Length: 130
Image (cartoon, rainbow, N blue to C red):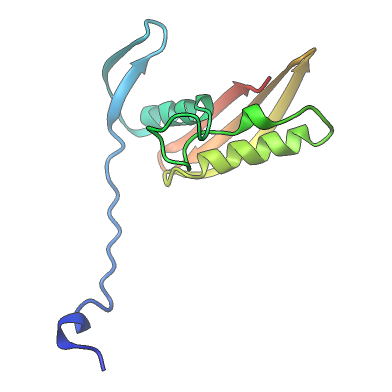
């Protein structure tokens, strides 16, 4: 038997979506300039996640950032890069899918571009891995 004070809580489930409003980074001038919301805020979130090394900065949770710096060269590199990027970005509840990965290798550099589907729309992103 469930006590009376808990019976009213059985079927209560409410999903609250908060606004994505955040500060806007002005990358060209290295400053914060105003605010961003919607797709612009998500584009910035994707950039920040990809540029942050996971477990390196104690101000971020262990779910934030990528582990791309730990990948060694080899035949499985593309699959690992795709997996690490997808894992990092899917931690953000506003991101619904990451797909269309394209890799470009130039000597010792590997660049990857891809599409990120979000609740606000799709954005393209790219990252130089090594």
